[in-house]
Image 1 (cartoon, rainbow, N blue to C red):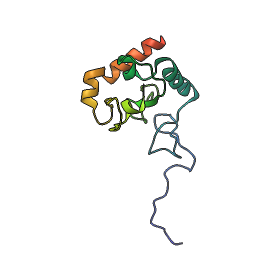
Image 2: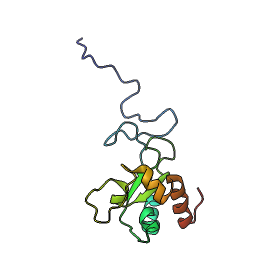
Image 3: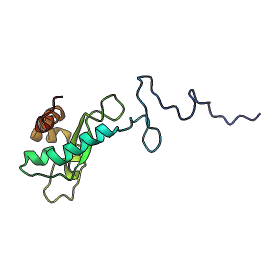
Image 4: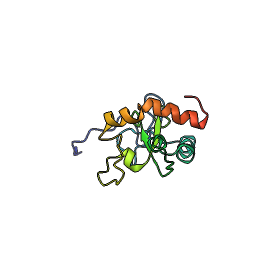
Amino acid sequence: MKHSGFKSRTRPMGDSTLSNGFKARTSGLKSRQLAVTAAEKQFWNQLAEVVGCVACRIDGRINTHVSIHHIDGRTKPGCHRNVLPLCAPHHQQDDTDPLGRLSIHGHRKPFEAKYGTEAELLAGALNILGVGQ
């Protein structure tokens, strides 16, 4: 029998249970990102519709066109609840933004100096939703 040089898998194909008991979504995602549950998606929708971009809100604007920013990655238990709703210019660096908004990616220190830490912003968003952390 000819060997291909590849090591065999340590678990059967299709079994994506991690040692912590959580399921890892392996197709379409990087490394060991955890799959998003329906309840987490509903939470994200509430953040978007009720809170909107947390930075725009501080600037005095309501902007519900947001993306979800994961505060501490996408592989830890509870990672999909440890998130902030941010509009595109506040989430990713956009040098063409006519308002010159600071983004969390690329300008973390000035962003946090102006708007607060991610933990403070999350606490504020949860307060607006009326849920505890």
